[in-house]
Image (cartoon, rainbow, N blue to C red; front, side, top):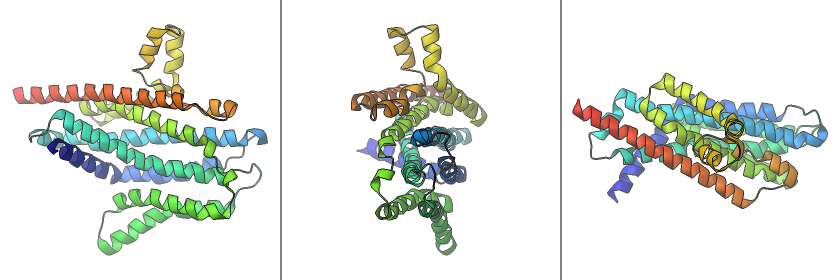
Length: 317
């Protein structure tokens, strides 16, 4: 019970720190507006319009989600240890594993909150841009209002009650997005919403969680510039690791084992399968979820080992 309270306390503090970061809030709001711009780009082929919107939107959601995970990791992990806050916590009766499990859980929840707003935006925008000739301007206006309603509410709350603006805005934005979508539903037909693409949205989130887990040991060990560099490296490695391993090693059991510990965003990209078959098997999605879980567990153990070694060296010195 005491261990659970410690993990909950660390996780809550991590969520609060990540959500209250102004940079993360700017990324959240700007991502929602950029998604609207991407969804409204005209496609070259009317027959491929829906697929074009999916490709553009989900590609950006992967980039934005990884950026959010990168900035949140720096805010809640790297900055804490660089400022010495982590060392202060380690001087109390809390183990490195408890500390990092709590921080990772907090990062998972904060990025889930961020990604919920992106997922709602995807569904919202799929209806707005469903027609390859005309935009649903009523839906677009409601979408923009929903995006800015959260920051406006947070600004009013800060002005009258002197409460934190970034934290309130980060929490209010997905709520306002969900309310805007619910208001829009009675005024349009459900067939215009791209529910078929929702599994692909979920798979992109699993890729972001894998990115978050792989980044954790770097965030524990190094300072901000190196974490940023490694974050970019991990992201780009995940784009071509499947091709590189297949070219160098071939398709065999050893290459499968190698890919199981490397970032590989290709395995999470199912838009081609959706376009060809209309759906993706639940067993494949489950295997990708287990892969993300394996990556997070593996790199979390590595991060704990690094933190324990750091504590031991600090105690010796």
